[in-house]
Length: 306
Image (cartoon, rainbow, N blue to C red; front, side):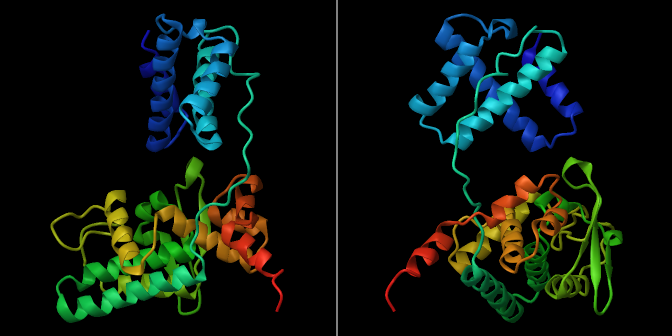
């Protein structure tokens, strides 16, 4: 029996993303390697005991020095393996069932504050101006990049959702617009209204989008490719803007978090934010009302004498 191959097939049947499946498999391989070295025996599903799981948790914490979130992720991967094994009748009891995860403080995700958002938008505007002046043939590509990043910032869509958007998914008029996300996380569909900034960014791109034989909104401009953009290409765009704006760690998820934090700061309810982001649980959305370091710094500064 090939545990890894069978477990991978099971995960693929659970409609998980390729990235998630890869993460689970890597985590399980690490556990198997630890198990064989620690116990000096070959790995077998039926040989894993609750004590093994607890010792592995301690190994990850103390010897590897991993953060609670990383330890818990690896334990979750192992728990998924054992749930599959139980279902497949490879084991009679789940050794992870009563092993607690590591307690961790709720940490706010990384998002751009207003100053950083202004810096990003200025870098985008400056790039557009310079490219139109010096590199007119590349300007359409830079227009696409600018519109795409601004659209992400003002819609909060995931990278996979952005890349999958097709022309038929967008409806725009002078005063309103919406985008249909057909395949969100968990294969859920949702309709997202577009604010003025999102509509403007998209319209400015569609006005110059070349008539390529592709239904995707975000397409390659230079070269012969007619398919949509790749995630790696988007990452390169964000890296360039981050350098120009003096930002660290600019990713699609940071833009998504920034959109959600902007809503929370304006008093929008968690229920509405959850729907816009495509969250199935309010507990996931609650992170956007969790104070980050800047929020705490502002709070303690209020104690200073005026």
